[in-house]
Image (cartoon, rainbow, N blue to C red):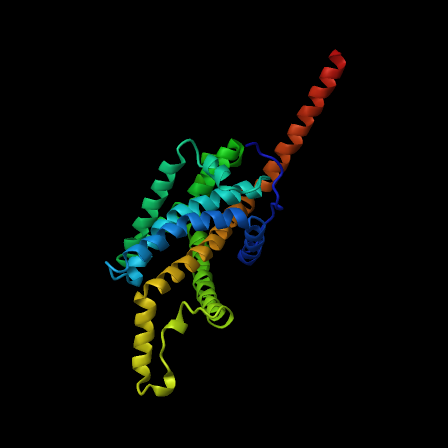
Amino acid sequence: MTFRQPTIPLAPRSLGNNLDLALLLLRSGLRGYLSAWFLCTAPVAALIGATYRLHSWTFPQASVLFFLAAGVLGTLVAALTGAQVFSARPSLSRAYRLLGPRPWWYLTQRCVRSLLQLPGFFLFLYPGLLLSYHWPFRTEARVLHNIEPILHRARDTQLLDKEPSQLAGIWFTLVGQGLLLWGVLLLTVDFATTWLLGTPVLMGRLGIDPAYADDSGAILRATLQFLWSDPLVLVVELAVALFVFVYLRITWFLSYIDLRVRNDCWDVELKLRQEAAQLQRGIEERTDATAA
């Protein structure tokens, strides 16, 4: 793949602008993103569905599966977004090529790193945050370098590594946005399956009537236990969470572009390179015409 004109304007954007633009990119490349989402969600759902009679799954255990799937999914989404931004229709085959000569080995590395974040978050908060944003945009760097080496160099990585506070602000904001969106989508799925499709998958299956309950605390405990351990609910929660993660991962990629534009004048550099390439072609054409 060769570098051409970006499909989005390279200009400074706020995080809110990046969230809006990520939604547009998600819609325009929905087929590729849904393919990556299904590729990572289906094994998780199949594992829980096949083993729930033998093993009592709980939300923390399902979170381990989420981090494993998110390591692969985030890498694929970054490759798809890189292809989409730089003039190519996103597809899984193109995303694999953009990950380098051994894509499965790189996906395994990202999966292991994502899994290491889990004990970092729950046992020691700072190491988990360190793994999340202290070494930022490594996948973006790999993808863009494979598109065209001028798009990312070692100097660019060193520049971005000097912005830990700004990256932490972006990361925490996206996490809060993701949790809010996850809750809203879960309520939407619950309403749609219960009232529109007539096949409840979440609270409609709980079967608690508050009118006949004497203890509101018992209702709350039963509800939390249901959301915490029911296998079908866990599958829906993970599927929705991974879909939200796709949206946030696109936004993270756009945040990389924003930081490059703000801190490195990336838009000016690419514009000058394009103008130089056009001048070089003009010189070569005039030279060929003169020689003829």
